[in-house]
Structure formats: C-alpha cells, structure tokens
Image (cartoon, rainbow, N blue to C red; front, top):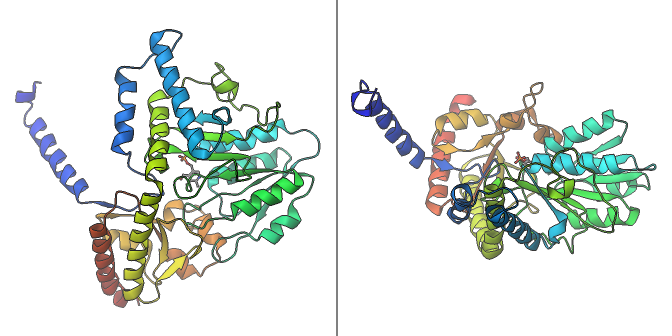
Length: 405
Ligand code: PLP
C-alpha cells in the first residue's frame, strides 16, 4: 500500500507522532543519574563515524578510525590525568566494573584473597563480588552511617596484608553521597591493597586527577556525562611491567587483548568529545547545576513540612536530591506530576523488600523508605523548569497530605 493510499494509517501515525512530540517537549527531565542527553557537539563529532569513516581494517579507512580511537583515548586520558595506555574502552561501566574486579581477582597469586566493599555500591560491584565470594574470595561489606558514608577507622582496621582490593565508589547514584576517596586510597596504599573506584556518577563533578588520587582502577560510562550509551572505560594504573588484570573475554586481541571485540568507534569518539567538553565547561556546569539543585531544595524545604533529605548534606553530588515526604509515596507524586520525570526508590528496589539496597543501608523508617524519590539535575535544566517543579510539587503535596493522613 502506498503512502497516499494506506487507508489513513500514515495520517494517523503522523498525528500520533505530532502529539508525542508535543508531550515530549513539555516533559521536564530530572533523571540525570539514570542517563543524560547526548550533547549536540558530541553527536556532531560522532556522526561522520557512522556514515563516512566506518572502516575497520588495515587500509586508509581503517587507519582513519584507528586514529579516531587513539585520539579519544588521549582525550579521556588527559581528562583523567592518566596515560593513554592506562585506558581500556568497554561497553559501559558495568562491563568496566566486571573487567576490573574479576580481572584483578583472576590475576592474584599468594594469599591476597580478601576484598572489602560497602553496602551502597552499585549492583554491578556487589554482584561481581558475590560471584567472587562463591569462588573462594573473602568479601567484607562495610556498613554506612545514616548519610551513607563509610567509617574510615573501621576500614583502616580491616585492611591487612591479605587484602587484595577495596572497592568503594565515588558518588552514589541514588543518594548522591560522596565517599572520602583520597583517604581510602591512602589507607590502601599503606597495605599494598588495590583501590577500585566506581567513578560513574562522579565524572565531571569531582577533580579526577589519577596522578594525584591513589586510585588503582576506575570504571565509568559515557552516557552519564552527555556522551552516548554503550561505551565506557576502565582505568588501570600502570605501576610496573606486569599486568594488573587478566581479560574476562577472549577474541581478536583489541585493547591489548584485555578487551577484545570490534571497537564501537562512533560511541568512543562521542566519549572522547564528552570528556573534552567536561574539561572546557567543567566548573561552569558544576556551579549551574549546584545552584539549580539548591534553589529547588530551598523552595521545597520552605513549603513542605517534614520533607527529608537523604544522603550526605555536605559531601554530595551537586545535581542530586534524594528526598522523602513522609506519608506520600514516590509513586503517588509521579502519578500526579506526569510531565516531571524523576525516579522513585522502588525503581531500584529488590523484589523481596520493595526498597532499594541503598535506602535499606541507611536504616531509615519504613515510612521514609516508601516515600523516597530521586531528582538528578543536568546541565540542560533551566531555572524556569526548577521553579515550575517546585510550585507543582508544593501544590500536589498540599492536596495529598490531608488525604493520606
Ligand atoms: N555504577 C554506578 C554508580 C551507576 O550509577 C551505574 C548506572 O546507573 C553503573 C555503575 C552502571 O552503568 P552502565 O549501566 O552504564 O553500565
């Protein structure tokens, strides 16, 4: 059936498309911890690598893509204060975490079989370490305090000559709490344990100079900092001629045989460009996002009784608000504010408890657990959006509170 003779289907699709576009335009996206929009400059840098420079072999077109690959590696290395040879491209943070944790464990000899982590790590870390526990490693999971920080003194006492690594994240993806990574690195170094840091939520928000930080391995995903999905990287400090990690995939030998498989060049180019933009825009974006976050927080706290902030009030991701309004569930808020996109704790919940493992670790009341929702502000949000959200939420809460009592 042709376009002009399709029984009206094309027209209907067009109308649906227009309505959808209009609805999308009116949406306010406040879920930047889940993913961020690709920056237009990142997209422009990527496009030629889909259409023009797609070669993959030992010829002119292949050389061009190889040049782009190494250029992105150099951009990433420069951004992290690392050497290009210390960067391995992966499909994202999950894969980088698996490669770092399993790759190091496979490489260990002697009696370094003890691993330390903490309760609010991302599931990619916790599940990997559960797997290693099943293989005979001893895993200690530290508790956190009420705002999600580990106890450094407890960590100091636990690290011994048997500790292979400490896996502790930079910024938490749900509650925004930032862990004291300088001090953790220092403690690890003293005992010869490796420090693995999931920096996925910290890229762009925290000075990440690997030359200064005592981080031995770090994992990240480009889509958390205005790059594309499906690409990430593992940083592994090179401290001598020997390899720190072994591969967990086997194949064609790419990435120095540590991570084989045909490179996703457009995405890698996008990740390099996203890092370059972070270097250029860094502090400006940080300040903009922090001010928007604080504006929203002040407006909500001035008008909503008993609203509670979860996570650390001081050492915190600048775009994060993890909030709870007792007796109102996150789901109710979502339902009554359908054009405002944010996340509820149940989105990250375990099937058995209905609460995310991060919120459970804070040991807050059941009422708070049910109420938690997460706002993640990005550089694309505006003051107008933030004020609209504050007004709308205050109104909705004003209606819900008397009904829920
Ligand atoms: N680590 C943290 C802290 C995250 O927030 C995420 C994603 O939400 C990941 C790891 C996994 O990232 P990806 O799903 O891009 O592999």
